[in-house]
Image (cartoon, rainbow, N blue to C red):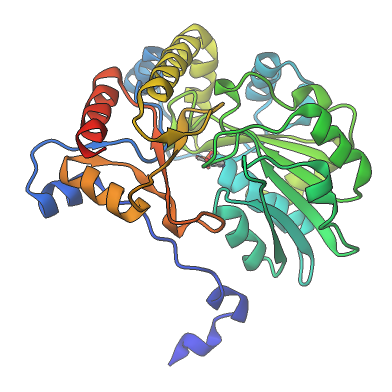
Amino acid sequence: MFEKLLRDEIKEIPQYIPGKTVEEVKREYGLDEVIKLASNENPHGPSPKVLDEIRNGKWVLNRYPPVEIPELKVRVGEYIGCDPEQIVFGTGVDGVLETLFKLFCRNGDEVIIPVPTFPYYEILTRVYGGKPVFVERNERFDITPELILSHVSEKTKMIILCSPNNPTGNSILNEELSEILEATESIVIVDEAYAEFADWNALPLVNRFENLVITRTFSKAFGLAGLRIGYGVLPNWIVPFYMRVNPPFSLGVLSISCALKALEDLDYMRRTIEEIKKEREWFLRNVPFRSFQSQANFFMVDTRPYTADELSEKLLRRGIIVRNLSGFRGTDGYKIRITVGRKEENRKLIEAMEEIA
Ligand SMILES: *Cc1c(COP(=O)(O)O)cnc(C)c1O
């Protein structure tokens, strides 16, 4: 009876259908061994230095963490080669994006979202009263300046470009991104959650445009998804507003220390990235279905002659969880996404696919 108290916008949010967990699949299919290549996590985990810090750090847990984290800003600035003053933190990229929506999006504002893409952009847009304007990517799932700009109106507040794009794996070229930035008066967010796996990124453009925001994370390349550490690279004018609105303690003490440790061991991270990229290319040569080139630690597969539901189910029966993309807006029911896992996991998936194909 109290449901009427909910805001109308909330009722329009599509229900999120999470993938099955390893435990569920073991139970439902009576299997002892199940592998999950579905959530784009780093199968190698974080640097041993991070684990050591968690075991041996002297944790002060009764006090709040610091609000300003200058040392982490400096280290991140060194890592990506930008001014530390332009870096802000949040509870994962998800948290950074939410704060950006709080800053910019209100009732009636339009937010351009090329699909298929990361579903949380639509959720945030609706929660903040905005109107998502979905743009279908072209047949290669690329976006062009013409495609984006033809959807810009007086009400366009934000344009959200995921690059490399989850779930299609392709990145936007900086020339094309520059054209979009030059031609619009909206905020352009480039979500680079997978930047470390890609051959290029948008950082060279940050100081050329006052409307470009880049979001990054420790969840994927650094293997720290469980600690929820995201950051944004903002034009200087947004930073003080971001700090007013972001929850003051969005990073816990454990997260702050582990992020610093992870940055002390970039060699480890770079080795895992090389391993994952090598496996990605091996996968793309060996998948017995049509698959799409990728700049990330996952890739998309066309499941024909099966539907995505059928192929996902056949793989589940063989103890392998992949991401069925049928629930993703802008896909056709014939696409799945595969996360690059450990070598032996990847071999098992290919064996299973060869049996099925
Ligand atoms: C995984 C993912 C995120 C979430 O990152 P967190 O830092 O863990 O919140 C954001 N954007 C995209 C495109 C992702 O795939």
